Length: 193
Length: 183
Image (cartoon, rainbow over all chains, first blue to last red; front, side, top):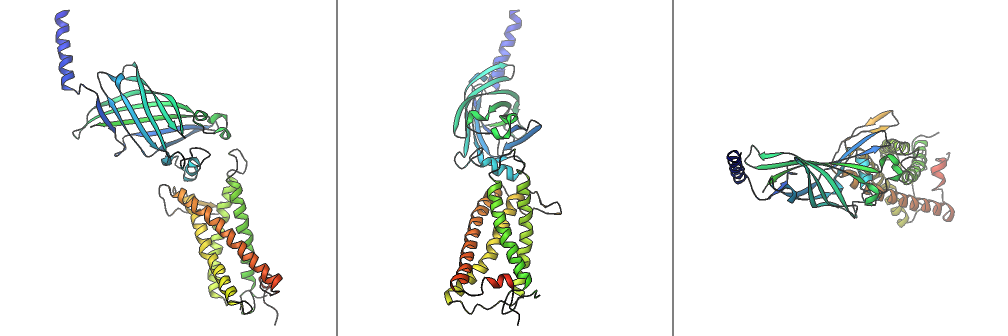
């Protein structure tokens, strides 16, 4: 058994040396739009209304060998909300909802990463939205990563979380009881720096 | 019944357009202020903006026609006005055209900023010509400010007309109602 284990251990060391061993910094590829921040909210309980934020930026650090040490930070331009309907977007930017004149930026900064399974983690962090900062948990999974065809190294993740709008001081009550929560879906591809 | 305007008074077409637009402009202003306060579950939440947009487009068509009509017609004389009054009234009267045009254009730009057309009472639709990120916000602000400016100008216009009627005891106001005197 020992004889078998040693080559395996050596191979693991060799692999670790050939790969980036330490945590590497990544910039989220918003320039070429390999990342998106999407949301959906119930419309009257009848259907899902889908929207997204078109402008955001962010960075993360990620280490294959110690994923629990990963960190992520994202800044979102609240003005860039897009539900494919200009009049609705105009209303969402007003004080009734996001009040982007007063709160132009939403931010998320991770505080801890808990590994929950193979390629899966819960990212805890503070989300500041509508001027209110709350702790949230994002269920994240590693989608893939490695060398891209253009000489760079990339890592990609997907995450979901559900926000209660009342927690962030946004009064959606007149939209009806079906529309109190919004689901966020995050797709992030980072380019290693 | 005179359709066209003459040196002594306004014909039927001008008078009809004047009062129709006066009522429509005030009604659209009030409708606009009211509709943005409506709750999402109000039965008028979709209907009120539909009527506002539709009536606005019809008013824009009427405005263009009225401008052409004004150019093509003789202008009744304002001999009884002082130099200042004559200059001020010209500024107010001609000021309404670019102001209303900009007001209606900005409203059009809000609703069409994402490429959607404006449906006019389901009779016809006006296509979107300009799409730009955030255009709806800029156009919205312009629309709101110009709406107040329009109502302010209409108030000046109304006060001046009442002054000519009650203080100067001239025919300025009544000629917009009853047309040129029979000669």
